Image (cartoon, rainbow, N blue to C red; front, top):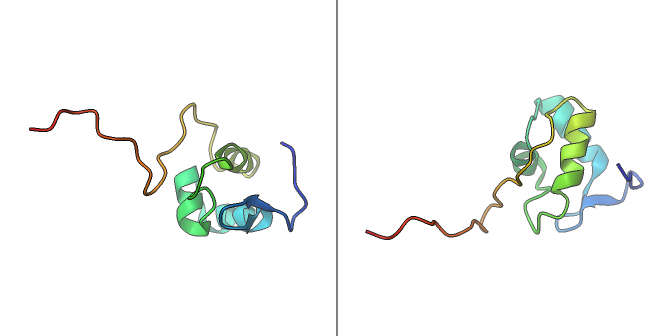
Amino acid sequence: MAHVPEDDPVCQCFNVPEERIRRAILEGGLRSVEEVTEATGAGGGCGSCWDEIREILEETGGTPPRAEAPPRAGNRPPDPRPEP
């Protein structure tokens, strides 16, 4: 992982530094990007930091990487089912 200095944000949208993400994972037993987003806000904007959040989760024992990105709050894809 290309580590950023501890005070530089991993999540640019919400200015969330790596140390806050690591602490939330370790203290809260978080295991997914969605849980990190709920606890810290990181990953709740544009989503460009999801890969780095996944790497932090791996490094801290949170969860293995996932192939697909989690849905972003407020920016979900349209439902493919036809309307009744």
